[in-house]
Amino acid sequence: MTIIPDYSISTPENVDLHLELAGLGNRIVACLIDTALTYTAVVILALPGLLYPKIVEGLGATYSDNRLLIDTLIIALYVLGAFLIVFGYFIFFEMIWQGQTPGKKIIGIRVVDTLGQPVSISSIWIRNLLRPIDEGVFLMGLLVMFLDKNERRIGDFAANTIVIRERLSEKAIDVLTLGPAQNLDEIDAGRVSLPEYEILSEFLKRRKRMSGPHRVEAAKRLAGHFASTLQVPEGEFDPEPFLEKIFLAYRARAEGAFEVS
Image 1 (cartoon, rainbow, N blue to C red):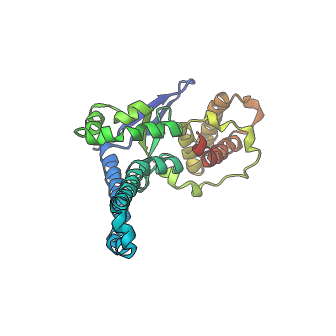
Image 2: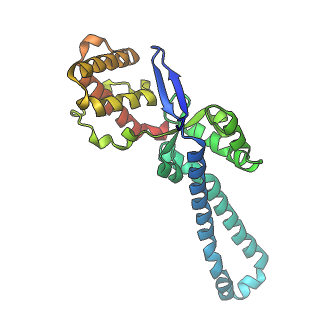
C-alpha cells in the first residue's frame, strides 16, 4: 500500500484541510525535466558560435586589430545568456505559471506557501536563489527533503513554501456546471485559502452524485464555514449559489492576482 504524504492546515474555525505533498519522486523527475530543458536551451544558445569563424573572417582587418576585445565580448555575452537561462528559468516560469515550471506542469505538482495560498514573487525569488546550494553542495537539498516530514528543501524553508500535487478536480474544472458569474467583487476571495478552494471545487464537482439530504447538509456546512471566513451573515444567501459565487470569485482572482501576489 502506497502512503501518500499529507500536509494538514488547521483553520481558525477548527476545520482541518489537507494537501497532498508532491513526493520526492515527483519532484526529482520534474527537476530532471527542467534541467534537461535548461541545458538544451544553453546548447541552442551556443549554436551561433559555429558561425563565429565565418563572421570573424568577414571582419578581416577589423577583427585582427580588435581580436581580444571581440573574443572577450562574444564569450561574455554567451556566459551571460547561459547564466540567465539557468538561473532565470525557474523564476520566470514559477512567476507566470503560478508556482509551476514545465517539469512541474508535466508531473502535476505546484509550489504554494505553507498556508496553501498562491506563492508570492518574493518567495519564488528566495527559493530559487538558494537552488544552487540545494543542488550543488553534495545535494544538500535532497538530504534535507529526506529528513523533513513535509519534504522541503533549504529553499522551501527560507521561502516558507511547500510543493503539492495538483488534484484531479483542478484539471477538470470544465466539468462543473455553474451559474452566471455576477457581482464577484462582493466576495473577498483573498480570504479563501487554496485547500479551502480545493474542498469547494470537490463539492461542486461531486454534488450531482450526492443524495438530496446529504447534498443539502454538505452545502449548508460548507456555506457556513465560508460565511464565517468571509464575514457574511448566513441568512443572506442560498448555500449552493453562494458557494458557486465564491468559487468563481477565487478563479477570477487567481487569473489576475498571481502576478502581483
